[in-house]
Every structure is written in structure tokens, then in C-alpha cells.
Image (tube, rainbow, N blue to C red; front, side, top):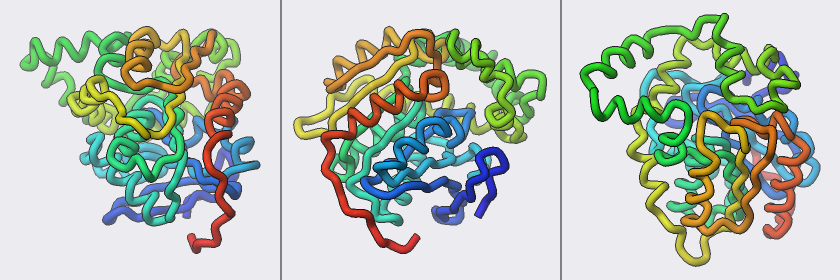
Amino acid sequence: MVYNMFTFVTMKRYNHHGLSIAYEQRGRGTPIVLLHNGGMSHTIWRDVAPGLARDHEVFALDLLGFGASARPGHGYSLAHHVEIVAGFIEHLRLAPVALIGNCMGSAIAMSYALENPAAVSALVLINPLTEATFRAGSMGTWLGLRRQAPRLVEPFLSVLRRLRVPRFLHRRMIALQLGKLGRASRLDRNAELCACYNSPDQLRSLLGVFDDMASYRRLDEITPPAGFPPITTIWGAENRVLSADAGRVLAERWRVARSERLGGCGHLPMLEQPEQVAAIIAGALAGTPRVASRSVAR
């Protein structure tokens, strides 16, 4: 087990074929799995999870390569992340489970549901990452450059994979993800959030997502079949990482049941407007079947 020095919660471990995946568990009731965005950790849910845990059993994972989970330096494809989440859900016998994700966490949740629709009760997808939403964001030009001038871009990316994010850039990495509400709250000064960039392998893990953008492109092309779990999407209106406008097109293709756009929020609305995000999640889960508290040994 791992002790979280910031939230004073003992984190548990799930072993996936030798890869240690850290997670926080709290509450009892209908299960929820929370999946963070690239570059961060389960800590982005710190202001939302306690409220959800009053009526649900909440699991907040550190994805492979991030937080307190294993950092093997490879295996960061979308398919592998989905495989790990699938193993976690099966191991703890959580199905049917509600999946809530942010950015790549949303892509993982959606991909898992496409493969296992009967195992998912509901989806709440915050700032879902697809190739289209990334391309229309502030860093989308890198995707075009990589395809048009690979001989120029690939050596640069190779160097980045070996670098550690300098400490003076930690705050800037957080600030890039914030809207005016997050900046006003000085979330970029929060030690717990900045600590997410302390790992020497952080850039390698992030670039692993970038390397597999073709897999995220497929999410732009699918239309969920009839009987698919209900989808709620949430976008930060001031998201600079991904495009909320591109998210509108995605919502139409995915036939979402509810779509929310939160003013003043960027890429981390669960930290910028936690009460509003928690209320939207609660509303999305209100119609899901209730289950008795499980007594499965964990």
C-alpha cells in the first residue's frame, strides 16, 4: 500500500500482470471508477470523490505511468490502458460500473464501454480526448507537424522523452490547464497538483499518449449502438488543451444524453467548479440501478 502524504489516505494496489496500479477507494454503494487526464493523477478528484462516496463506492485510479502507479516507460497505448481498467473492474467484480473520466480518462472509459457495454451503467466524460478535440486545441499543430515533417519532429520528441520536467515549469504546466476560475483560486500554486510533474518519466508517459493518437482518432468515427450506456459530457468552456467547440460535434455523433459547458473552467473543471461537476455526475447516476453494498474481499 502507498500512503498519500497530501490527502492522508492509504492507497491500495492492483497488480496487472506485474504492473502495480495504485488506487484510492472510499464509500459504499453503486461503484464508480474515476480516471484522470494525462500528466495528473487521482488527486484531481479530491474535491469531488468525498461527496460521491456518500452514496457510492468510489475508486480513483492512478493510470499507468502516472501518480503512484508503475512507470515501465512503455505500454501507454489506449488499448493497454483499457486492458488495465478492464482487469481492475473484473478483479474487483465492479460491473455494472459507472465510469467518469477526464481527457484521456474519458477516452479510456468510452473505449471500455464500446467493448463491454453491458458492464457499464453510465458514462460521464469530461473534456474527452479524441484526435479531433486535440487537433483543435492549443497543441494540435504538433500533430500536423509530426505527420508532415517527421524527420524534424521525431528527434525533438526523442530528446523530450529523456528529460525531466524542470521544477520551474510545474506551475506553468498546471496553469495551461486552467480557466479563469482556476487561476483565480491559484491552483497552479497547489503543491499536490505540481507534485504530479515530479516524476523523471512524466514526459515519456505523456508522449506515450501522443504516440498513439491514431487510436484516439477512431473515437471520432464511431456512433454508439442502440442500448449503449447513457453518456453525459462536461466541457470547460476555456479549455486550451482540447477544443470544447470540437466537443460539440463529438457530442452529436455520440448521441449524448446531456452535455454541459462550464464557464470559467479549463481542462480541470472538477477542481475549478467541484460542486457543479459533482452535481452533474450525481444527476447522471441518479437513473442507474442501485446495488447492495458488496462484501467482496479486496
